[in-house]
Image (cartoon, rainbow, N blue to C red; front, top):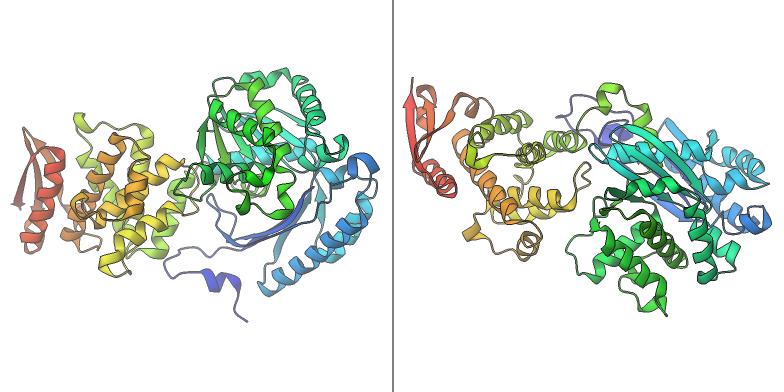
Length: 511
């Protein structure tokens, strides 16, 4: 039988990865995610969840309901069969608040381990918070702020500064728990929520910082906001709102007279809709007390945090965005070596006072270079359009939506000049980023177009050429060994780059 890693491996990969499966038994959902391996930018190969509602009545009855238990066990049995078919040998299973607090939680675990075919670890509130923090570290660069992971049974709050967990607490504010303890009364839930949050004065340390929102219910809110705003992307990770805007939106959802009138609700799973007003309530009241500068939604949570804990210190220090882009280039482009050459080649272009970059802009430029050839197999007329959509909707980590859109536009312009741009999606995305980002995307696209015309997409050519500035000029020096690659089309593309830079193009052949 073919192994999973054989199905997903590429000859371009230098290392074969051992797939890892994570079973997450939450208070609302039971989920299996199979990742390609324990790496800095893990890619899910399989993802399935069942909304079982294990935590629906734990607060009032003290027990997991029989119906929820049977649904969860059926899901675990299917997950065991799936991992067997995929030949995933490394499977880790975790259970959170509902199982942790239920009187019959241990009994469920015994049955669950038989159904899943693996040990199940019941996470303490402290460890759940730590894994959530590690999930944010996995998905973002130098995270600084407070992360909140809202589940069906609890809310974990974590104060993060770079890779350090400063403080963490667990509050009994999960959506299902609030429905259970308040008799499904929002006004009563509001009082309970305010009192619980007020018991943690340290949350005010989030003022003026970032709040990272984790959990399915909050992702559903982000999806609804996107729908209402007619936002062109559907990617949750890195979706960012000003803190006050997020608070106002959450309040509008909480106050809605009819949930069915809310935009985007149709895109939320039916079994999750009942907890949406409670998730909105918790977010609204939390932001009201915290007053963060911005809210960023994250799809990285305790599952990714568990993988992060398996990484070596060296692997943890890698940039998640560049790690993903390098892997993607190895899988989809003609030469990852050439992609790295592009990073160095464009360094020369941006070594000019008029093009001074921040550290983040530099890493985004390098990411764009790594992704610049992933659409080469498409028909030439559609390479720009397909690359744009592929990158804009890719499973990127370590980047917000502005950065994601910049990357998509830069690679789009690698195939289409601004004059050739007729794609409606490109127009919509362009209007979501700054003029500075638009200009940089055009310059990078034009630079890569020039480089590919010179190197024909193969390594070993552009690394031997140089780009320098002279007063009012940009000079491309081609060694005599590659003089035959000079020509009309190369010069035309170089002229296009020079025009964007406001310089006169000069091509010279050197010994």
